[in-house]
Image (cartoon, rainbow, N blue to C red; front, side, top):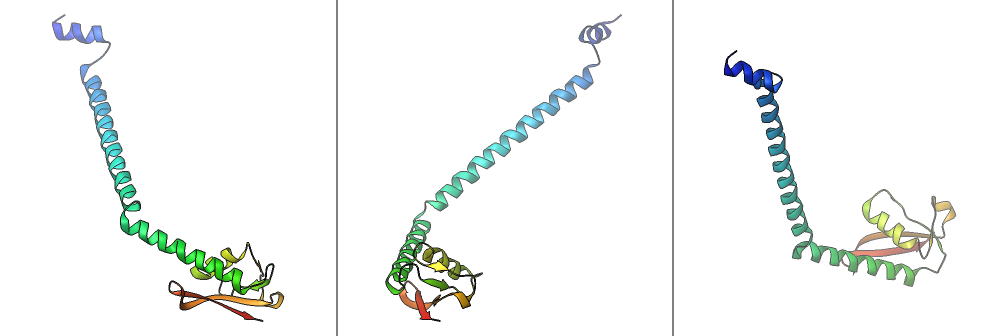
Length: 135
């Protein structure tokens, strides 16, 4: 028995399958490390974008606009007033409905409401104005 056969017999099998397993494990480790690195890099970029001046300024403007709408609801409607917000499926009407919920009582249909509330273009709250009319 020569040295190669003795080595193969001592290790319990051929050397080629062990080398393939080792190479496969190394490839999986390298790919995993690269994916983790890219994930960390992407997370840092997202965080920087969220904390950037432009994003913070937009969020602050949105907060000021919502506070203005909230105050307009309280000044134009009596507490507990049954209201209807038409076209509820759109973004700004959803905001009007949500902001009015703590003060007024949104109704599913105009027949049960005493007030119709909507957000229209204007200058009262940023580029919006709260429009309240009796039904």
